[in-house]
Figure (cartoon, rainbow, N blue to C red):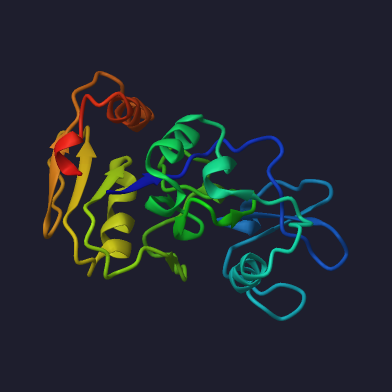
Length: 220
């Protein structure tokens, strides 16, 4: 089984950053022009061009291909987010079977070294953090298309369009857990309602139920 979980707004306090040539930390957001000034930081979109002429996304991929001793102190994706559900999920399924659906970077493997960013699909977020459907992102697609293992998604309805897009063409069936009034349509897959009265971040509750073996055992 391959597990995909949406990213989270709250990152760990020790999260690392990509840096400009003059040493300033880069904080990736959806709309840098609307972000509040922050001493020692510059704002950028993941696909903006850095001061060396390369896109930040390409710089990050290059860093991951040759991380050395990881001088920037970037955390692996499953370590980046504050909620322990990511670590518990990684312990259960393994890093090679776990992926993060990131509003900033795309569909990334749990072991991918990921810098601090503040991008979300949530309509409640501040405008400079919010990624809109019309925004252009060169999202990464790290899920092997030829996998024959079932794919399970834990995430809210705002992230479903990106999940569908970045897993489209996968050979294996996709299952999404949902908590919305409307049943999501998953071509070549299925939607399973998760019963809960929780509305915000309900997918963590869903993950914990999965880890306890209360749901999802029939999908493996």
